[in-house]
Image (tube, rainbow, N blue to C red; front, side, top):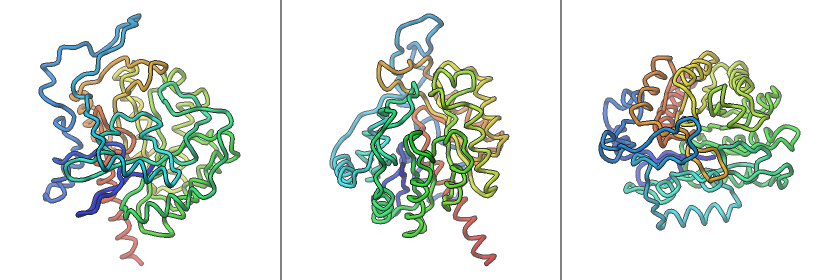
Length: 367
């Protein structure tokens, strides 16, 4: 997936979630770093006063109905020039997008652009078909997807360089049909990007079934942020994720990446609203922090189709704010927590960009 940060008058491709205008203004303020550390405000996610909503927010045991979407999750879907332009460019390059395949609720806002002219999109490497069938995800599945496109790393790197990006996030489908799970393909894409630019690169990768060689292949590609999503709490993992995706295995992937390169920032994401308890959420956050994960996002699970898992609870913005504070207290470098926050979130990327650039400057000074 690739996600971009916007500079001056240039329109750049960015993350799944649009970064709201109030947050953009923080760049010019002396308190910029402090505001980023504080995370997104409730105003970023609410239209009106949440206390005025009296609808049902949680299903009780045995309840077979579906919850109605609360007001803070409702979004208009503007199409417009930016939407059509991005879709056309991506089709020409034969690149797949998580925006479309995963039915992201932010696609209209991101692709349509906001009043600042910012447009966003998300690239998914290795095709649009996954070998796994997680019960929360609407990406197509098959035991034998099409072969990899050998030109994809160059196509992706060339496009990203031409668009003049600052920060890129690459994600992919799972490819258990490949010997290395596609690790070398992802790594080659990173290398092609680094060969052409100084762009900061984050990779949101599969678990590679815990294979250390595959994890090392990614770590040694010279990426800047290694991301792998834990997705949900341990108790719910067998019901939410594919049977090959295990909670402890995901922790091991993140821990291995950190051990291979202690300076590497590792990142993960948790979906809320699947029936987890507060204690389980806190334990998951603790498990991630204990293995050195530096960046964390928490967002609302949204049922993509009637065939997928139902939403058990719509978590309130106030509750998301609580988890943001907990993350800060635990010592995460950054915790992005909100109803429409997704794995790649622009506020977090601004913050990580500042950290990575400072690290890069220090290395240059030492040399």
